[in-house]
Structures are given as structure tokens and as C-alpha cells.
Image (tube, helix red, strand yellow):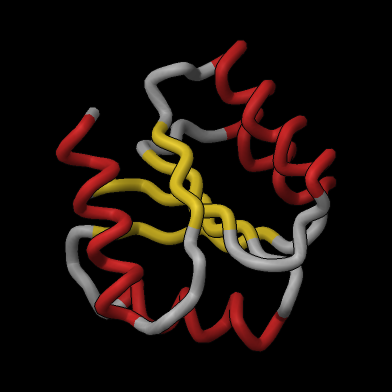
Length: 99
């Protein structure tokens, strides 16, 4: 099972992504929509992947990537560009096959 931290500031998209990913038995999904939640989860838990969804500023994304690189470099950072569940699962498959 892969533990994913799902980051998205749009609550409707976050809910949809959580629902879609949670239906797959191989993913354990933890949602986060604020910087406080993001870092709280990163400090407390280990994640195989961090999925970056919509709404993050360039600085927030850069800061998250820096934190992960410094503290848990084995964690895959995956950017979800939208476009449906087929693209989402391909993004995840590619990220985890390359790790």
C-alpha cells in the first residue's frame, strides 16, 4: 500500500481526488488543504508520495519540494495536472515505477 499526502487548496477537487484514490486498494490517502495541515502531516507521518494538486502558489510548491528533499528525499513528489482519473493514475504509476 502506498501512503499519499494529497495537497489541493480547492476543496471540491480535493474531495473528488480523495474519493477516486480511496477506491483503489493500493492507496492510503491523507488530504491537506492548508500549509499548516501539510507540514503537520509531513512531520508526523511517512509518505511514499506527495500529490500536488491545484491552488498552490509557486513559492508554496517550492517550499514543499525543498522540505521533502531535505527531510524525506525518498518521497516522490507528483504533480497532478488535472484531466481525469486516467491521467491521475498514469502520473502515479510513472512516479512509483521511477522510484
